[in-house]
Image 1: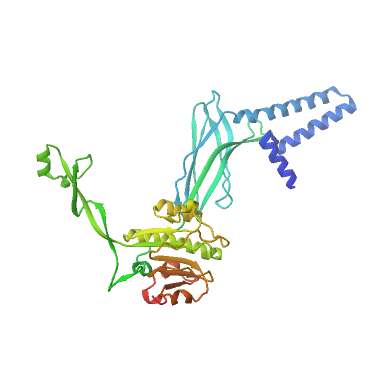
Image 2: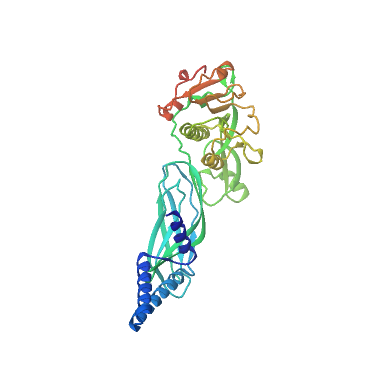
Length: 391
């Protein structure tokens, strides 16, 4: 059965594959030809010849029906897990004759979803058909598939013909980001300076605050920001640029991919890394993601798009060793129980999945949050200070 399926698939892609009716008609044509050979009856030769001629025409027309069609794919925008992917394909007919009665088949990766297909009844000359569909997503990942298939049996339906055309696709599904309202694990990270957490001032451009500089007016600037005295002096409109002073602390979210993870715990750890990074950025932290064994030895990622892209495609590598040591900054260390201990800077915290005491970290004064797989992750990341061991 497997060999037969491979053979018929090869026929369909390389030439044509007879449909069920085509096999029946071919069998009848051979039967009438054999009967005519035995009886020498001319009318049997005529019936056999007509059937064979019909089969030949039916085998030559389907490839011509697909010839010249151009398939293009629109870029797929990244989404977060549980948000559907929006996929768009366009089929253009540059020929002078209409094309119709064919299928568009988009063979998605099995881990992303089932094969998607739609049928087109007619495509006039010079026209473009746009096919849009959505694919539900359940799990993060970076998915690739290279081509789209066009399939037809028109016009007689006796032979199936399938042709593949290049339309490479890359779909990025980011990990889920939990809507954390507070996170004591991050809010109190870093070394103390007396009774206060140490911070460095950070200036950010804003539409309110103190005046940083004056610049020429640009279309769309609010009129309330125009500095009229300076504008009168220079003879052109000048606008104030404002800035706000905010407290900024550096924090590194480090995911230990070299530990031995089980699949559910690692997926939770990735969700936790994405959620902690997003929360840190919203709270004004200078946040970065640390992953071992990144390309070119750059283990720190700061841009949000690169952070989410890396988390979408990360997988545990228990046999790999960390390429570099952690930078000497406050760190949130996400690891599995039983993993080798890592020298964390002062003021760091660690989050542990699985059964483990975390005594090494406690001996070094590192606060440890033990994750219980049976409890909601969002609730545990918002745990009170007292719930974190040796905080």
